[in-house]
Length: 548
Image (cartoon, rainbow, N blue to C red; front, side, top):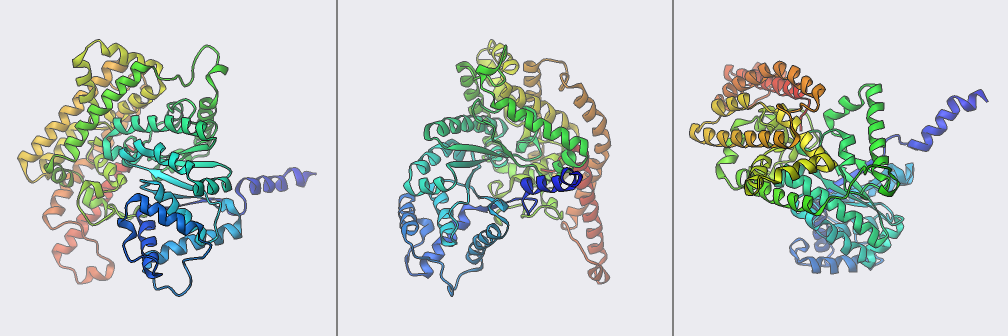
């Protein structure tokens, strides 16, 4: 009995929870990789001479329907395929082998990023069919503002499609939907991203009820506020009514793992907050006495958010994507190019070799602004939108104050905004622009616009939440940031000086021990400066407790 109640009982519980693999695996791939692989397969096998990737959506779906209903296997041995297509096929083959060896729970789902249409889901279903996989959950990831707006339309079409319906039956009529906080924020700004995500989740809850499909929302949050980070309990409570229902998935990013789970007691506390938030958000309002945990937003609240979102979106896009000088400012006033030399992350900073901001991944985008102390992705566009809204009718301030007090969504958003505004330091940020932007007039113009928007945002937030200073309603956090920032400031000044010197010599360079023997004095200096810059990047990231 002692053995059964002790180590044996513990082992049984561990196997029940973790199986024989400990950590389950999610597989993720970009939707364009599937389209390209299928296009090549169709051409190599002689089924199509044209390029599948360029076809209209209706034709793509017709092709996929024919392939899914055809019992023959297209991916026969001996086909001469590109390494990219071979890798896609190998991935699905490996998924099947892992699930057969360790159990189906060893690979929990297949995420297709940048999902734009029904064909993106059916393509994954086709590759699953080719490898004899019929119950691997297919998880579309919606990342841009436009994709979030069309998310439920795409899923409604999928739920009504006979072939996807049958696949859904194999998955017990359970559908995971992943929402991208990072790319939507980079695409449309923090306010528009937050509002579109809220509306999407609300529509998904209605879609679930309408089709009798259990929808679990997978929140693709990052560590920084600009990528959906922030206090987890408040984040869960801020979700729309009916969108949680006891099911929740959240990504935890890089540096946040050590902060949240590195110490046992903190890890337990964090899990308590996740469970408490999930349970609390899943309780129907009719079972809650005297207060609503997740009140349904009023009509005038929704109208206010629509107005604010539209204005903030326009302001954000005008600065980030429509001002041709902004890219120059961004590349010179932040260490974005130098960040790519850090030995962190599994993917390159850019999706392609292009320089455009659209090609830049969200992590280095947020990381670089955090380094230069602007923290721009976490607040830009909000202040101007609120100012414009209140100028039309000053009486609207009372409405926004009511929304903040009664609506967990806006409360969490503005409290996170206070934290990011407190982490930003415009005086140091100005030094990055003044010393590193080669065109002085360009640097001063954009730095001035950013400074003005920061002040508008700070004043607008204080007008709504009350208090004389940011985070007056959270004195512990306020004091933590106040004490921490002075230790980070010298690193920022060192970084500016080192970046200036390094760029004057031609940019980053690393040398191994053998290369150093034959290197010139200038090359050795570049390598030394590169090392110094990377040290400051690590130090600032640790100090502000955020990478990307």
